[in-house]
Length: 628
Image (tube, rainbow, N blue to C red):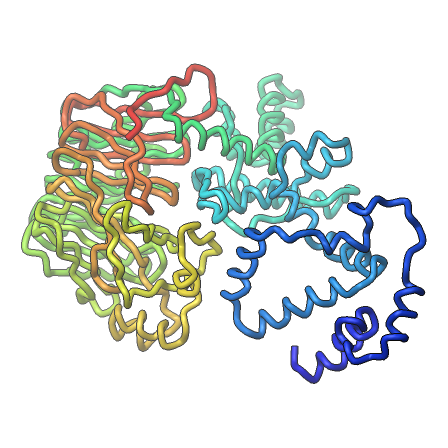
């Protein structure tokens, strides 16, 4: 607010209501007479509860210091605006204050309820109704799911993509039904983050049925003329699936899963079927796919623990695989990549493009990449049918990872103890990360809002000085430990932004609209360590210690990182601090692969077994593993 505008609006208000403070040179008689006129003769209140004397209570020193610190972190213009608001409120009489508060509560009531103690719902029925409102619990989900809250440091796991899509569809149906038949209550807000869904303890039949369309049932009814009981039950199941769940139920289910993760409460299943060591796996909410040295790919139903399909076609061990909603891509030591329709088991295509075994594949949108024992990386653009080769490693390429931020970059890990960042447009190496003293087996990209813990006492974090954070396009919650300086980095100045773009090469500096690569990555190697790297500077910002032998595999999400190693152990890490949270044992051989979902953890080993740890809230859970 400009000084000229303030003089026309704020100043008259203050002069009118607090002339003794704002106009100390006014005549004393005038002030005294005004005080006598405004004096409330009503003595129904004791001296401690008089409305006009509440502001004279002793201030909470610690709270005021915190407010002062937060105020000093703002820009001068913002400080002035907030100070004017405080001045107007403190100067206003009781009637004006009530009117101000009514307007504030209209805008802030439900957001503030998400911070009220749970006991508030026991005050009255009206408070209980307010506490159960969808807007309150939506904000609770937004604050905690798939991120760590800045206030409490607490985070809840996100659902798998398939169920997220179902939840989005249900929300759209819910919205359309409310437009047709509006209800006299506050509507559910459409999710602005990947919308969390509730856990469903449904059978595979119900999950498959949720994919059917309504016309499927109409067609059956028209053909048969009579509705069979099974169809009726199936239709009811679909209708039940499509009903939007209350956000409180979503939060409750996510809270239970998060509680089980923190306390190691899970159910353990062991999958046996491969004739040799398991080399790779991937899981989602209903199925798991595993590959082995026995040259087969096996598909498992996670609910029934049954093997549903075996894919045969490779002549040597399957070292890598990845599937999406439609296809499965596998790589083998026989030098081929095969593309399958995993729904039917049909082999769609075979790619022979390497002179050695294929030991890594990565499918991301229109890009498909592979790494091989011939020391090269092959990249395919499935949309333009273009393919090219990246050369630079001097030993086996154990891992390729296309950056998911649409930056058109790729990370690779190799037995030459190096990790490289490649520009897919220029087909050149942008940066090489050196620091491991053993063969690097895995590289894992971290979310855009990830920031490592800057507490140097935790894991020896080194201050990067010139390392500035990249603005995140994802509306994530910044970490609670971030300093004021790091919080400002989330919105870098123009010169800082240009410096960061220049750090990734001319391809990013000359194209300001091109998304930047992920800022932080993790790598694991046979030197028994996991390292966190800043991709803008190429520096290692943290090293995770704990495994006794080489780390073969990594998997992670926003809340945790899982590793499997040659010491037969599986460890769960807090990625920001680098602390080991829990260790699982049980395998009789090296853990060669791990998989992670919202409520499950899977590990495969050279002993031919896959162990699945389920943290879903159900009966029969027991505490497993050892806290670190």
